[in-house]
Image (cartoon, rainbow, N blue to C red; front, side, top):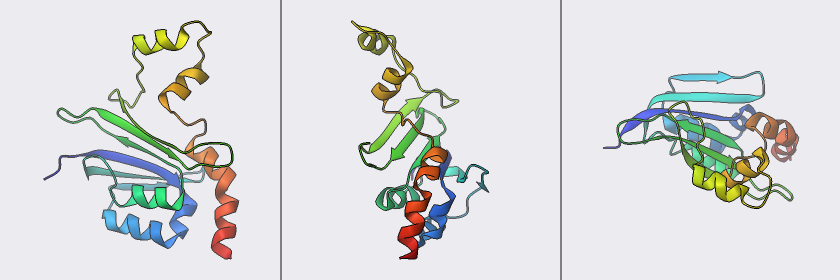
Length: 156
């Protein structure tokens, strides 16, 4: 039996207009909290998610090429983690990173990694974010840029 821990996923609200995404949300079961946010995203939380993930919804979003962020709480010997997914768009490569975080989902980078990144050049937040694989855009920013493309695909 899997360990269960709280998990929250944020994805574009327009994704719920797509049948495979609606089916995946239903397959996850009853969420403990779900809210459509004013920035065009939906946030869904399950307090007892198996392994702190959404095993039906995450693959459905990846297959549909829809961005999301998932945060999972720490429990027992499992650290908190964040998963970022952004599909490839134009010159931007796909980002699919899962990384351990502090309990409040703050990303962590070791001193050794910082020293290596800063060796021989000026250290910047852009370099640190790129090293960690953190997307440049939030899910809300990605949503604003890509909503039209999905609406056009759905209407044709």
